[in-house]
Every structure is written in C-alpha cells, then in structure tokens.
Image 1: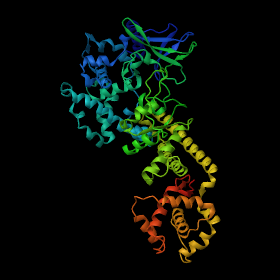
Image 2 (image 1 turned 135 degrees about the vertical axis):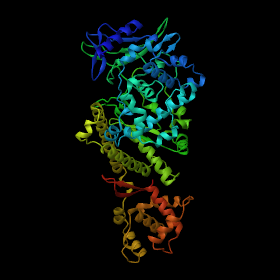
Image 3 (image 1 turned 120 degrees about the vertical axis):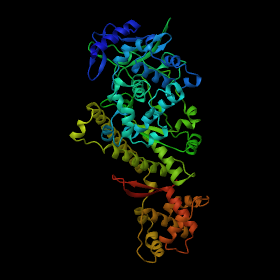
Image 4 (image 1 turned 30 degrees about the vertical axis):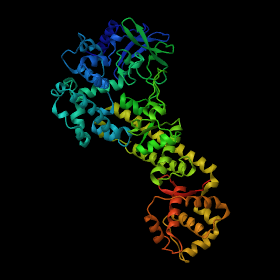
Length: 599
C-alpha cells in the first residue's frame, strides 16, 4: 500500500471512530513532511477533536499486563512495551475483548518507520556529525537509560524474560563497558534495517516504541486532571500536525457521555492554503532533535545546555543559606503552549529533595536572555569559594568571587565552543555514508550552538567590562603598586633580596610578598588602608590549611628569611587567594592578575 492509500485509510478510520475536524481542512502527504494538515478554504479558529475511544492511554497497559500497584508507577514504560506489541506482534492483542492491534492498525501503519533521533544514528554519523556537542556526548548514556528501562520491565516478569533473546539480557552494568559500535549493532541497527522482522519483546522494538512516544506523545492530564503529570497518551490524527512555535493554540478536554475527548484549537483564523500547525512549546533544537528527530532553522528558543554537578553538602548549603542562587530543574524549561494549569513546582518543594538535583543542575543558555548567564556566574562564584578556597568568610556575590565566576564560566564556554567547532568540515566520502537529513539537522544544530556560545562569551565580556569600569578603584594591579607604593618597589623589595635581581613566577607571588612586607613592616600607604584592616581581620580567623605551601614559598621565594614568620606567609598566601582574580586572554591563557580591594 502506498503512502497516499495509507493516509486515506487512516482518515477513514478516524472518521469512523469519532475523530472530528473542519470540512475546510484537508490532509496531504509529502515525502519530507509526511502527512500534514492544510486549509483548503478560509477557516475560523479550527478545532480537531479526538474521542476517548481513539486515544492510546496507559489504561490499556494496566489492563493487558494486569499491573499491580507498584508496576503502575512505571505505567508509561509498560505502555511503550504494549505499543511495541501492537506494532510488531502478528498475534492479536486483546484488551477487554478488543484486539487493539487490529483496532489501531490504520494509525500504526501510518506512523513513520524511521525517526531521526540521534539514538538511532550509526556510529559514523554520531562520531562525525555530533562530535564535540552535548548531544554527541550524551547519546550512549541516554541509550543505556532506555535499555535499562526495558530490562527492568522484562526481568520483572518471568513469562516475558523467557521469551527474550539472551543477547539483550547482559548484566546492565556491562553496557557502559561496551563501545558504542557494539551497542549500535546489537540494540539499534535492527530498528532501521530489520524493522519488518522485529520481535515485539526485543529491545529494538521497544526502542522504536520509545521514539514514537518521545516524538508524538501528549500529556494525559489535559483530559484527566487526576492523572500523573508525567503520564502520556497517543492521539491519532491530531499528532499528524507539525510543530510551529509561532502558532497560537490551546488544548482542552471535552466531556461526553462515553468519555472525555482531547481537543485542539488554533486561536487564529486560517486562510486557504495555510498549514495548520501544532505548538509543542518553546523547545530548542537540541531537545527537538533528540526527542522528535528534526530541527528548526533560526530557532529563537534554541539553547546550549550546561549541567553543573554539586555535592549534597553544597546543595544543602545553597538551599539553606543562599536562596538567591538559582537552581533550576527541567520543569523550569519544559514549556507547553496549551495549558496554564500545569502543576508548577516551587523551589521549596524541589529544594527539600536533594534527589531533584542528583543528575546535576541544568542551565540553558539562550542568545536573547542573559539571566541564565548571571545565574551561572553565581554558581561558578559559589564553586570557587566552596571548592577551591573553602572560604566561608565571603559571599558568592562579592566582587572577587563574582569576577572569578566570570572567568571560570568563560573557560567552560570556550571549551564547549572548541568542541562544537571541532567537527564542522565533512569530506565527500563521509557524506556519502550518511543520511542527508541527519547531515542537515546536525549542521543546523551545530551552527546554532556555535552562535549561542559566541554570543554568551561576548555577553560575559560585556558584563566583565562593565564591572571593571564601575569598580575601577577597587582593582589593584602590580603596575599600580609600583606606581603608588614606590617605597615597596624601591626599598622593601630591594632589601628583601639584598640588592639582587628578583625573578617571580607570577604576579600572584609578588602580591603575596607585598602583603607580607606591608604587614611585617606596618608600611601600608593610606591609599591601601582597607587592605591593611581587612588582612588584620583575616589573621584573627583560624585556617584549616596545611603549612606545606607556605613552607615552600618561604624557602624558595623568600629565601628562608628568618625575620618573616611562617604564619604571616601562610595567611598572606590564603588572603591573596581569596582576593585575586586572573583574567584570561582570547586563547584562554593567563593574561593579567588583579587584586580586588575589599570594602
């Protein structure tokens, strides 16, 4: 049966089962777009309705597998397994006396056989097209997660496990030890090259079902307010429409005697020839390519993801003491175009559960929104104090940690940019081995990632420049010390090294010597009185650091001067660490060391 006949059979089935759409609407087929909806006449705020009898929900899985209370918590996974049976098993699938495989056959046969998520790309495509990107680095982990999801289901039922090919039932811990090419050949390749022969209980069949759900599923709570917020459903006919983030739409329930329909309405009047689109919400190309298998040129919602992992102690410290540090979750980014009543979790409800952040804190950087950058500067500033300095005397938003946070974030973004630019050139032989659409998607995705990263780095430079301009009086360089504290340069430094030429490995060493000499000799000039007072206060605090670094500095830099005690050296080193920042040049090399004068 050709694609047009498949489409006609699906539409006829839709009418018979009770799906409704305007007479002004027609469905067409295109090789690239698949089946899509177009207005053949002007249409006023068109509505499409899918009745409850045409909706594939997890209630079918609960009935078919007779799930117990514990298994119902994995209802989405069981529904994917059931759908794999509906697609690939030649035997009937009976639920309440109805063969649902036969019932939904027109819908199933109209589904695309190939979904271009990177989860099914071959090793050559992944290694060449997505090298150095977030997606390229996460495919194996995500695929192993789906494998684990399937394994848990199969091993929970002996009647299922006994029917599964043993090659898929390797101890899950061994999957991470496999190279991706082996994973692809065993678990993925059959989806694309052996589709018609897949066994419904096999992992490749489950993977196909998984991709159908990630690319086509809708949230069940639209029609059932008591449903779990993560529970999903499939909506034949309605899922034919393509995504357009400019479309104004609403999704809503409609009660009937026989159940609740899922309704879609376009909130604009359509002209003849207009394509009727859906709107999945503001999704970037990384999410679209990973979950739906396509990208959008010039996507205004495109983002670059940066995931930061914190220890439990750090998380509890932030949640308890720094409520102004942003700790977003995936719920903060997953948007839907239809529903204003979706449950929104407050930070309080998330914050009390460290498990919320067990996989890290996700920050999404966008070219048009600088807030995530400010949030990231805050978290990097905190990390600088918490991990590198173990400093509890400063706040993350004070000037020195803030400027250090900018430097650390710039390094992280430049590393991502270097990765994103590392795989942009393809030779003709490579392209021949690859799917043209995947080459196109990777190009759009990668180029957008590069643009966003460059814009983010430029924004950081602008933020830094503003801080340096506004806080100029608090930024001390070695050149300024030489200019304003001539006694140190001409006398104290010369006397320290007994007239011999002093060679320093870094400006940091010279700042430490300056603090030591000024403190030992009581010779801070008036201009730097705030540093004197700050250092005196700092010396009143106990330090929980080893003396080894101070002993080495005292021996090799200060030549073991007996009139300079180890304690002063130790405190000077730790004090300078807390107040110095190192600016990096365009190549990421240390360019200038600056001491931030405390208030």
